[in-house]
Each structure stands twice: as C-alpha cells, then as structure tokens.
Image (cartoon, rainbow, N blue to C red; front, side):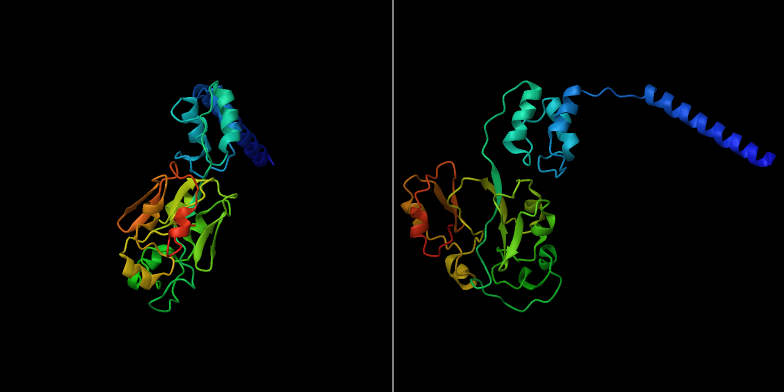
Length: 261
C-alpha cells in the first residue's frame, strides 16, 4: 500500500515540476506577435496552398505585416480578401484582375494522332521516360494523365477527352497545376481573356499537321489580320498579348487550324 502512495506522490511531484518548468519557459521565451500580422492571418482563407509564393498563410501574413508582400497577394481570397487586409494595414489595395489557369492545348483524342497504344502508369512525369515522351505524336501537347488534376486543391481542373480543362469559376490561380505539369502547358491568363492560342507546339507547320488537327502551324495569318497588333509569332507559335487584344475575333476567323479559342 505504501508503495502505491509513494508512486502517486512521485508522479504528482514530477507533474508539478514539469508544469512549473513549462510555465516559466513559456514566459521566458515568449515572442511578441504583431497584432496586424494576427489580424491579416485571420482574414486569409487558410488554404495554405502556396499560390502566393510563401510557405502557407502564416508566411504571407508575416510578409504583409512587414510590408514585404502586397495586401492582395492571396490568389485564393482575391479582391474581397485584399480589400479587408488593406483596411487592416491602412493602405489601398491595388486594382488587379482575377487570373485563372489555362491549358494551352486543344489536342483531344479525336484531333491528335498516336504512335502506339499505351497501357503503363498514367502519370505525366512518368510518360516523359516512355518512347516519344508519351503515345501522342505531338511531344508538346497534354498527355491527359492528370497530374494537374491531382495537384489542384480546388477541384478546378479535369481531363476531358484526353486534355486537361480548367473551370474558370472554380480556379483560384494558386499555381499548383502549373508546377505539376512537366510540359509547361499551363499558364495564368486574365479571367476576362476572350481569345487565347490553345497550342504550345514549336514544330514547323508540316510536322504539326501530322500530329494534330488543331495545332498552330505558324502561318501568321492571325498576326497579319490583327488590327490591334496584339499577336506575335515566334518559333512557329502564335502568342496573344492580352493587354492589346480588343476581342474583335478576327484572329479566330482567320486561323485555318482553329488553334485560337
């Protein structure tokens, strides 16, 4: 009986000692937190997606509080959250249009040719180590294995008929899909963009036409007919400057391969 009492006393004493030690340590090593940082962190959505370029929402909150990041740097929260944080920081939020991810490929199963039947691991990165970097003849296009789908924390991207498609309204521009795509097919574009070149191939026209029915062949008809000079063609691939585009739609009409959507 005395052994039980002794053990109980020892455990209680140890517990008391640890409690006192932790209490003193908490006071001794307490780090003061900037109230603005805490308020900014509370205003952020808490997705910790890393789309802002910082290690989670706490990292962004600390950077904003120190003036090292813009108040509207959170791509998930967008303008509403940016305005709230601007109020906390006592500044005005810079106006900025919502950005969304876009997959620069239209090579659906019925539009592209394949070199062989593939039955291996359905992974875009793994496909890079297979013959011709995948079964599709075009080595620039979407493999359709969905690494971007797995990486998206907002269920905003899905593979449809062999090509990844982004839901503009669900996309938060966090950039996870961009990092996940080994072919660098995904880019951020303005939400309001009306016309975009949906191709990434830099092959010459004859090569592209053998691989895909909707690939850009670098014919420059879009560039020659653009009234706002918003289109350039480099390495046989057209690119639209969204800041110059007036959404007239002439490029879409003139493109013989319908590579512009």
